[in-house]
Amino acid sequence: MTATPFAPLRWMIALPASRAGRSIPNALFSPAACRILLRRYHPGVGAPPIAPPASPPSRLRRAIAFGAYGLLFASLGFIAAASPLAPSLLDATKHRSDEDSLRLYVPEDAEAKAVDDYINNHPLAATMRRDADMVESRPHMRLPDGLRRHNLTGGTLLGPGRITVPPICWTRNGGKALVSISHLGTDMCGHPGIVHGGLLATMLDEGLARCCFGALPHNVGVTAKLEINYRRPVHAGTYVVLRAQTVRVEGRKAWVEGQLETLVDEGQEPVVLAQATALFVSPRFASVMAKLNATS
Image 1: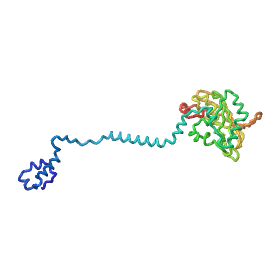
Image 2: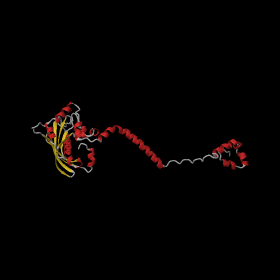
Image 3: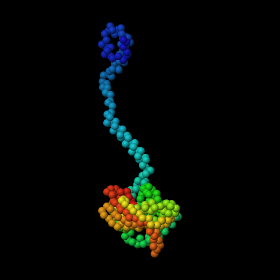
Image 4: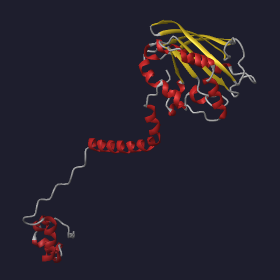
């Protein structure tokens, strides 16, 4: 067996001389070879001790480090994705008053301006404004812009050919009564030239609910029951008036009656188009809904 230059030094020292002479080349005992071996196995006098190899990090430390890096990059990704929405989120936190809702609407074309002027200058609007107990507003304009785009009556159904301008609404203090004026365009038909009954049902549901909000806890309620009787066809491109009044309130429940009728000049008798009765209930989580429902 021939020893290699990396053989342990103690093995070479303990080897008998007779055997070493026969088995180990003399080159291994040269001064240079001994210095190499000693340098390999002994750092020298006064040298600091060799530090033991570092133990690998525990699984817990690795998990914490991995979680911290994941949280960091997830936060950066969220910030980058949410930055375009920041204006909408900030706008959603702003409270809009009834006065704000009246001031914010600007007609987008000549037709909308003509409709808006007609409603504002109508004798019914003047009568409502003389009543100190009636509060005027455009309820849908109280919604933040980012939310209104996704609202059915305040966004999807609002605009040219549909509900032409945001309806003007007057509510009596305490949720006792409501009057609103709307213009229904030519693109909301079921039968040709006739406004779809589903739109009328939506208007009655929303109008009767808004009428009783002031009488319910947290000023909000959801529809428990709605019954509608359609009396006359509603022609597209006409003005309609919604009237409602709260007839009974018991705790979290309110019963409301209302109708849609034609908008007529002073002294004329309106035509009843549809009548409705409804029951609304303020849910147990109404305090949360009230913060989200800015139109109440």
